[in-house]
Image (cartoon, rainbow, N blue to C red; front, side, top):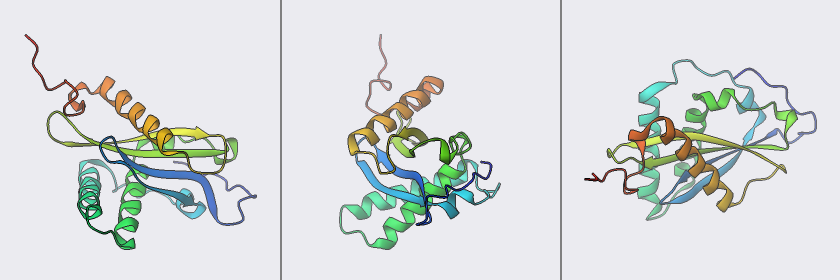
Length: 169
């Protein structure tokens, strides 16, 4: 993503970009407002591809296992860092509108188990009307729209249990 100008009205150092982790079975895990410094960082070109996605999928799976017990702040911070790094590595990051052209930007890192049994990751985005996080039902809508859009282009990544894994005669 090209370096975007900071909004002079954002004196708190925070941007109008929010990031979320969402899974259709789990719901929204975390939400976090990105600092301007994160938005303005230059991406490391080495942070791309299957290894990064696999690493973030592992972070998510560990988070989900630990959330059944008790999460410490370090687990939440690790998940947030992982989804930010993943989001920054995708084409969706580069397609974000200029920060000063919208009230807010919402990036939902959605993960799901495919009918093939692998974990899929996708970044779905939405613009907001205010500089605040979106509601859980909106996070779900954005995340599910991201899955639907991805599956239209990659039908083999359909969600497990949605009928895609059944053979019709």
